[in-house]
Length: 398
Length: 208
Image 1 (cartoon, rainbow over the protein chains, first blue to last red):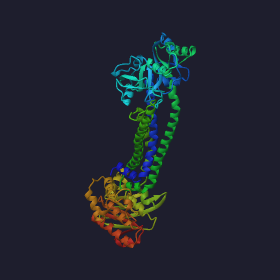
Image 2 (cartoon, rainbow over the protein chains, first blue to last red; image 1 turned 30 degrees about the vertical axis):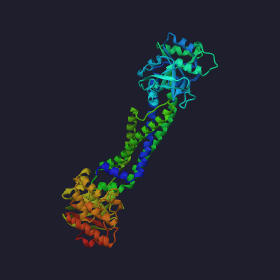
Image 3 (cartoon, helix red, strand yellow; image 1 turned 30 degrees about the horizontal axis):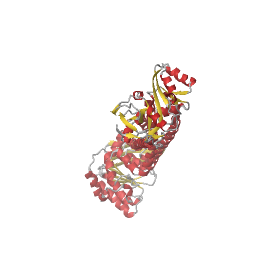
Image 4 (cartoon, chains in turn yellow, red; image 1 turned 120 degrees about the horizontal axis):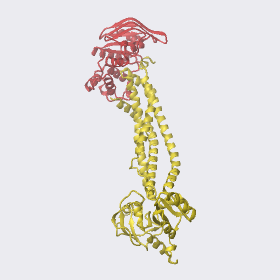
């Protein structure tokens, strides 16, 4: 019988207590794993989705809302801006490219984005099947939209008014025709339906039969996605737009960082809670080992009487403690990933946020090492007490 | 087998044991008798190499225990000494068979199911082999403790108050088992007790 086998036998002899110690530690580890996965993937996604856009110009309101609605497609827009104002801005010498975005409708929870061909360039998106859109009511589907809807080039569909997953009234009289499907990019474009600006205008102008046919000057878009021509534009253009026009300019990088900071407050609170859980778990393991020393003083003495070296008793207690710790870490990792995957599947309904439990974050390795090191330190005192136990006392104790 | 000369041991400056001269030959059975506090258990602890005496020389199987380091004494005890304790300590979470297997492993002896099963059979407890030690009756546990003491075929068996909690019939049975098993493996047996019922079973008696 090996030391590890004996340690396992002792743990198996009190299955409920062993399971509770492991579960307590696992809950702490799982909470931190979930936070690591959520914050890591959210940060990565914000960075990935926003990296192509230097500046977003839209209606006055919350700059964070403007970024969330027009870049991350996770909130409602702040309003609309005149298309002429957008065209004027696009002609500014500091602007390398300006991509219009017009929102308002959705299809099965996926946003229909009125834009132009430069949108594909912005995200380096390539057509996997079919062709890019050219004319009114033609649509190109993001990879996830195509996968989930089952639509293929040549198919038609009707958008619903509004951006919510449930959608509002269907624009059945203005069906879109799928002309192309994009390759997966891993970015926000995967879950968008792209169509020319004119399609969005056509659908909504058609909704107001009593209204005069709008001119190009009276038309509106939701936002303009801008790329700078020169670095100096980053310092001058937003200030000029915000100070001298009725438009609002917001930086995705800045607002993304601000969003992570806002999320960070909640994350920090959860992290503190998880640390308290883990500290409680470590304390419970410590108490379990100290009680084991007391309960099994005769067993340990007996092992020494039979010739076990003190180092073997140290190894026995350490093996018991580390089995609990490693068991807690493994179960915690599994629970954390399971919870992340569950959360991801729940969030997928909103089409706004996503997290997966099927990914591994390098920070998890550090977490595991840290918990195991902390666990080893927790086991050290009881193990050393076992090491120092005088076997003669079992003979002399009455 | 055992040679004790000028032995003295003390706790906190108080002398608890003195033995001027005591010899026990190989295969002989000897009784150490005396009232509580007379130093019987201390003597056994010294013979087992658990305590180094304050003065004197103790030789077991020709080996001066005081001359050995702690690790060597542990190895010596595992290979040369079988112990039966008053409260029949077995490892409760292990099966009867595993209680014997662990004694062999700690002595550095190879796994040999035949030897383990043979030791159990010799005491008529082979049917208990898979039972957890914590589920044994006192009589069964006593037999297992004796089986464990002899499973490594040690040259020396030390028994500390093996009959303390037993009625007359069980006392006689336990002693007979112990003496028989020690004789069967040719071991020297030293029984330490305050129980006067034991005295008639031994020719050699050391009174403390």
